[in-house]
Amino acid sequence: MTATLLAQLLPLLLEYTPQLIHDGVDLIHGNPQQPGETDEAYIQRVYASIDADVAQIEQQDADIQKAD
Amino acid sequence: MKKLLLLAILLLPLGGCRHVNSSNPAVITAVTLLDADHTCKALEDALTATDHVLDGIATTEPDYYAQVKPLIQRISTTNLAAAHAIQNAKNGGAADWKAALLNVAGSVDTQQLTATGIKNSVSQKNTAAILASLVGLMKGIETSFGGTK
Image (cartoon, rainbow over all chains, first blue to last red):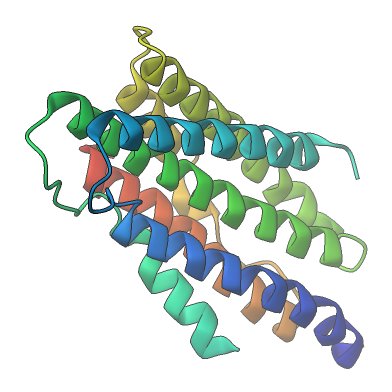
């Protein structure tokens, strides 16, 4: 029983740990303005990434709200 | 694997401590909103991971599942609302994104996010680890964006 549960849970943790580390790096380093990048171009890039993240969050929330 | 997960958990609550190398108010606003957005994204990823872990033990730990699953759903609902508020602010709207984000931190009593009640010790340890990342993030919201709870 324990081995079965471990076999179920380990892949999940392995699957999500890299994403959580990536999120942590994002939180610390953000998405810095590149040398030579204009303010306008940088703001557009930042705002596009926010739109992409929100779309992903919507999908993830829908999955979480689903009855299993 | 446990070391990696621990690293992830330690990194997650550290948002909002970045310097902006610009005096352009529009850039400062964009970076501030990006910080908030990254917080929402990290939280949703932690919620997704938690949800999958819960799904994995739903049949073996039904009482625990019934107790914690609604909490995860509630946090996710408020987190999505915060993400939409950030998007609204980005688009020039008047949404109070900071209040929405703080609402995520206060959406559940984090002391309820515990693996206590899981009978299988392996499941309990793994669930405790993933819940720790969630609680760390929620406390990070309070620290970075000025919550009091």
